Image (cartoon, rainbow, N blue to C red; front, top):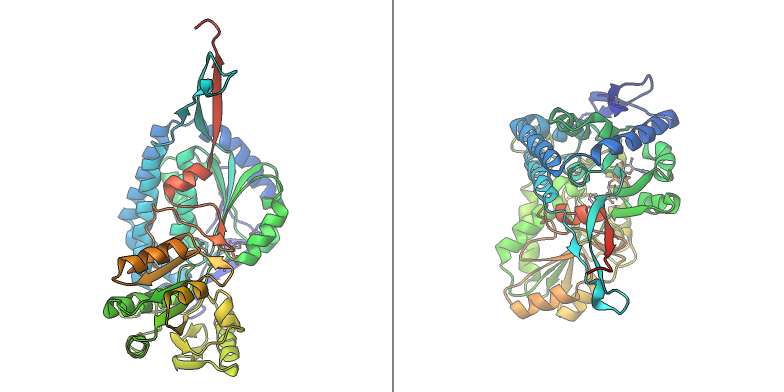
Length: 473
Ligand code: NAD
């Protein structure tokens, strides 16, 4: 596939292969861009903004509605690209494609709600005779950098609101899963968006990242990815707006009165969705000691039924990790935990990039599997005996995206909702529940700012005040 630069789909002699991690077959290639391409993208994006900022809300919304329609009409094609280039099974990929339709359609709706307010100028002496208001204006060039794990919908979470707000965009999709993103841009252009308003630059983030993020023509960086790349980008960015959607190691509390079946099913799915490569994937399960043994038995039983393997088969529950290197990293982390006293209850095996869904207990504090984001198909069980300790444990690490609790007790639920230190608390769902229009983001190292269409639009627009001094009235 090609990059979109300066209104043209272009290729380059130097290419990067995009491979299916299940069998390493080459699906396609993408151009490996260089600094000249970065300059081309930046220059075109500035010119693109001169076009996009003059588009009416009606036109922006119509283009987004049409884009959503195009994706909906080709849902199976989009799902198949997601499944082939990444880790998701075909069923997981279908869900992502249909969420993307919703994300783009909601962006169209939100475009119509970019509103300002009047201002009470006379609320302080000296403001008499002033009348005025503020509008919200697009920011300018937005640099969108996206990760591999939701290769379509997380791109839509940046392009939809950026277009809705009237910005121009430079998209740098994940190097390993760029194809769904490029397909989405093709749909946006087909729907009538001026191609000069959107640049797609492909290649290694570590190579083209610095000249992109440090350039003053970029007015906002909207980044989703890991903490390490996030820290590096912040250190290079200079003075511009920054949105950061980073990782987590999500805690879920299962209280003694939980609906056992609901908790087991939700948490198994939440731990192993997309082979655990999910920023809100369940990593730490804090289970009340009164129900610990029953929960453990049922959780392990259900995990053992998981069929892993070929992503394109309807019956497969879990596919491979994104690369064999990543699967080996998880294997090392599990081995480290076991060498320090952890017990593997099921799983722990690896074949190439396939890592078995793995459940552990007795995982000590000082190992990576406990305190880092695992971003793989493993989950740790910990017995707890009171709510204060469970909340303290949940809050003890430097991440805070979503947290969750299973309980029927409204007071327990409220206490958890108020005291868990994170961007959202799910009650009677695992952390792996997200509505695309809800405010989404984290505290601590999990991020800066919020996504979720209405909230992204706030971040991607700036207020501009208009004040009339009218001495004659
Ligand atoms: P990553 O940080 O390795 O890469 C993310 C993107 O950044 C890729 O496009 C990559 O090419 C680019 N990149 C890497 N180094 C860069 C640099 N120096 N300058 C500019 N760009 C650079 O992340 P990943 O492995 O693709 O994704 C996994 C991570 O993403 C996990 O930590 C996960 O939690 C996080 N994530 C967060 C959310 C969220 O919404 N909070 C959602 C999905 C994934």
